Amino acid sequence: MPYRTVIIDDEAWTRDVIRSLGDWDTLDIEIVGEASDGDFGLELIRQLKPEIVITDINMPKMNGLQLISMLKNSGSKAKFIIISGHDDFEYIHSALKLGVSDYLLKPIKPDELNKQLAQCVSMLDEENLKVKLEGESILHFELTTYEFMEATWAEAFSQYKKTAYEALFIDDEKIINGIFSNIQRLFDSEIDHLSMKSDLIYTYYALMSQLKDFISENEFSISELFNLSEFSFVFSQECTSNEMLAFIKSLYIKTAQSVKQIRLSRNKLDIKKIKHYIDENYQKQVTLEQTAIRFYISKEHLSKIFKKEYGEGFNEYLNSVRLEKAKQLILGNRMPIKDVGFLVGYVEQAHFYKKFKKYFGITPGEMRETLKIDNK
Picture 1 (cartoon, rainbow, N blue to C red):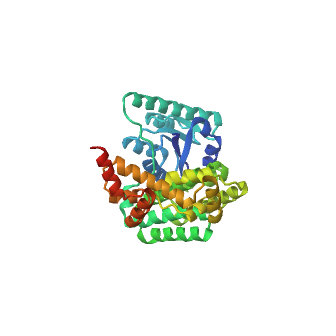
Picture 2 (cartoon, rainbow, N blue to C red):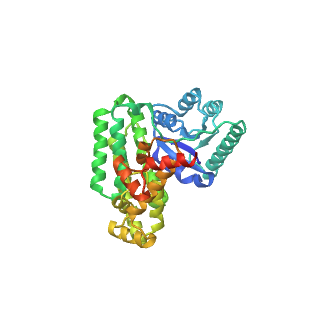
Picture 3 (cartoon, rainbow, N blue to C red):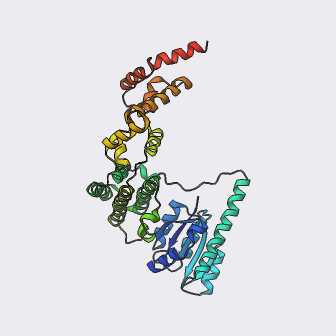
């Protein structure tokens, strides 16, 4: 996994320069967050736990040295690169005492920035190797959930997030607008404004994470659909939930439209990918209609092509996959039979029993009894 970095600077121009000058891909570094002040920068770092932090010294609310000092006192192991417009000995001395990797002066030179980034990567590689040799595991950041997600709005937000993901396949701007309006109402009515920074950051990364998953699942990269600055939101004291959600909503709408257009322009159905999709997702509520939407074709065309290629219909194949998996669970596991159907994708137990007997000629219970007899 790439090393993660957060950029904190109150000047938009400086952040743009840093983004454009860094050899991020070559150095295997990913910019995961941006902030324009120390307060939001601190919250981003606490939640995202980046390995590299690039920060200005002079910023509103909290300066860079205060930020680094607080993080060091809390046990942060991140590597810090200081950016400043002042060649001040006291600043440099204070920064070095805090263990800052380097102190870069504006205007930033690309070779100096990349030299320091490479040095940070080298130190991190060395530290990680040492940890591996000592037999410990290296924990990488993965967006999961935070304590504040125990709040009353968590369940509703989770459902809206799931619906937003499904809307990407449909490419319906009206539906996406409605979903984000509902999320905004949650912010307006439910969220404690004392913890707004945490809530904004969690919501942003939860929604952006699944957007990235959608892009990846469709075998695209972010750079194919967006430029780096277009895909990056900057947290600041002035930003509101409305502004942040409007930004993410615009990305969802553009992604849905772009992926659909590219898919249609290719105009080639890869039926093997659909078969693989069934094999990997049979335990979910897979249907012919839902799969057709996901692959941007009509359900009639999908049904016709699938049967022509594999000699059986879409639903026939789906049922055979589920029932063969059910057979494996019945014969190779002590799991209660009543749980098997649900685990392979059947919502109703009676429906599962009916399908199973029709396919194998015996009930799930009779199959397990046969196994007992054979083992005697």
